[in-house]
Length: 386
Image (cartoon, rainbow, N blue to C red; front, top):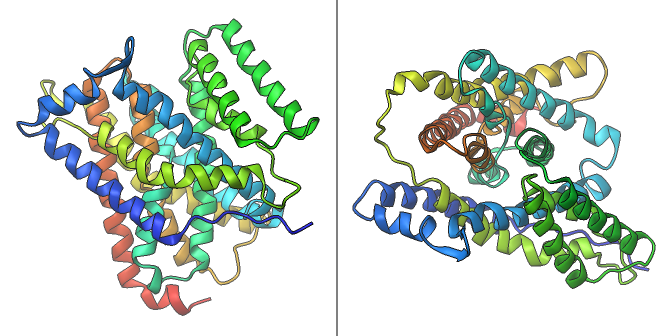
């Protein structure tokens, strides 16, 4: 039998996704703050697909479940065949990522502990893989290629923690009957994989649709269905091309070129004028900005350095501490996942959602500018100091 092939996302696709992400964000901001605003609102809020299920809900609840399925497949790939497949490979990015999750959350909590914004503490814990890798690729010729592997591993672990946070923190009014049915579907999928050796992509996608439906009815955020489905997908096949890889080949381009830009366009239509006193929302703004721009780099550097000192892990060969610091700055680009969490955290308050989104955009700009400054300042260090 041939060795299992593993899917790799084309570099051009990653760069194109980042460009589309930026274009979608700029277009949404322009439309929402121009006479075209009513068209934007009509498309996403007043257009209903089925019943009360609007186009905006289709993107955030259904298409984002596919986004999480793709993220889950990538996490599973990394665990079985990639940078998380052994303790030695996984320990450094995992420990660094834990710092990049815990410290930003603590920064947000400290700033917002006596405010009504505390439910947003998960907003600054995420890293946007597409945007972060896009920034890296723009300056790829000036950087050590090993940094991309570290950045991807870090972002994958961040994604996993963010997914768990959505499932555990932001699920309300759980319907346990529907939840039990959903877990029965997951169990049947695992049995189909492990016992009956079912490798059909169609079977898993149709079963995943049923899984999404019952998770949606259960009150647990339905995007979790994506990660649950990914857990059940086979990683091997008699032909040498796994179901996991075939799904990646189908879904990754669709996710990168359609779902991510569409999500950005649908969720970054932000009014730059508010009816409320902005000073009352200062803790929310500073919690997100400082969490992403200060807490994220501080957490990654602190945890990875302490981990190395305590002999819990080792810094990868060929990567300097200054290079780790650069990655920690790029990791402060929360964007897609942070915007998604803000929509859930403040679901009943559109003003707070808008302020959170402005904070996320502001944080992304700071992280990008800081990364460019460090790359320009320390170009020789990144390229030649090992």
